[in-house]
Length: 231
Image (tube, rainbow, N blue to C red; front, side, top):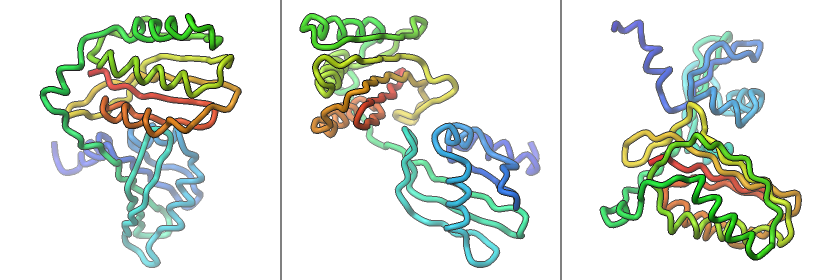
């Protein structure tokens, strides 16, 4: 592989890179940028380019906290060497927490569909929610802390108004991965939706539990979304 194959490294970089032309059209983007564009508009990213571009030809890095759905970034670099093209690179924020051996022992091979159905059954016994479940039955078993999963599920359910109609979806995120202990793992997405506003006072506690299990947590007034690594 010669130096002219540099695009291989750019394409496989976890940091999104996008190159715009003078007509605001994308002329190149890497795989990470494709995932990013599923969460933020092309126009918003172009406007960010213009706002943070250097005054003269060259490049400029700006530190800022950015979050688009489950993707978080700590800064961007914007650069151009002529008036025809301008590029932007976003630097992904990586969680570096390393579990202890004792913590790793709590992760056991499990069927997440069974765990989720058990959680729903426990809630249904109390008759509080009208649950509609859409689940991918082909998700293979992976390691998860069952005890923590049940805790997270209980708090997620409790955040919704009793009697709410809940749409719950469980599926794999095709082509998307995350890093845990410097290893890449596929992701499972678990989402709760309701038309009735939920109680967000326990969100920080739910997020804390998720962080301990490498789960990415995102929520608003009517929705909770968990991205669970398939350890």
